[in-house]
Image (cartoon, rainbow, N blue to C red):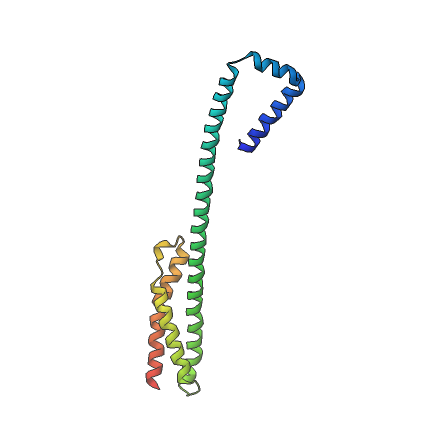
Amino acid sequence: MDGRWMLLWYSVVAAAIVCIQGWSDLSLWLKERQELAAWVQAVGSVAAILATGWAVQHAHVLQERQREKAAHEEYTQLLEAIFQLVGGVHQIAKKIHDHIESLEDKLVAVSTVQMMEAELSAVIQALGRIDVTRLDRFDFIQSVLVANAVTPLLLQEVERALKRQ
């Protein structure tokens, strides 16, 4: 039970006792029972201990939720980076396919091919930093591994095209 609801419950019970018995009757009854103060203190101590335990448990639950949320956000960012890298490899592969054929006809500038070479080198470095052991699905692992395998081949194709120039 939440501490606020417990406090509300005890307040309602106390108010009901006061209303039913009347304040003067309750006051007289409390004065006649000297040992009641010790019982009130004991019950209050137990309630304080229980409230402290609940507060510690609640803080632990909130901390654990925050840790799980941070881990989820970190994993989501990793997947977004992988998605961008694999998509980048796909886009570069399309550019290579479109431009290498026309390179033989001298229609494409060498600077365009050099740019593809730089992009591929950057993607190779970025893919090399991805720890596939952190991925939890085979599809994700496979996409990174395929991109790692294909990107050097694409780079070789671009380098061959530049040598022909």
